[in-house]
Amino acid sequence: NKKIWVKWDILHDNKFAEFFATKEIYKYLFDIVQKNEYYVNTNNALEILISLVYYIKDDKLEDLLTEVLLSNEYNKYHKKQALHILANAKLGDKEFILNIINKLKNEENQYIRAGYFYYINQMNLVDEFIHDIFDYRTIVGRMVKAKWISEDNEDDEEVTLLDENLEY
Image (cartoon, rainbow, N blue to C red; front, side, top):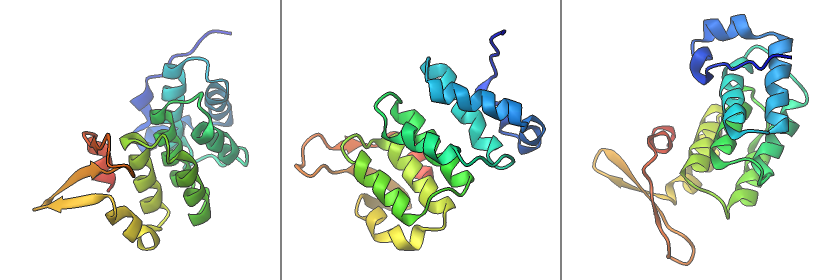
């Protein structure tokens, strides 16, 4: 019953991830995310799952990650990670992401948008979403300058997250 602490970026080398991809480790990480007792543990478990989902398939994963996306008990970075895992596992489709975008529109931020862009790209949905994506962007020279405009034109958000621009 010992607590195990695994550094979150240990599996970014996919050969190492394949070595770690056992059902026991997957279940351990799944349970951490599901319990969501401490945000750092949840964050680390989600980061590791981003790589593990290439090697382990689970019918319950989509439901868990949908809960992460829709629950107020998880933070916005967790939601970004959930979108990465769903994309890597090839779970969901155009209707799924449209539903998520619609449900998260009031809490959307640069982390969640980076997750949307990653999901849309990995799921080969860019052609279907290209007009929606460009509605939010201003291209300046060779750089993409992000400025998200709210419906009431108040509290516009300048984007500072590099991940969002890279995923875009």
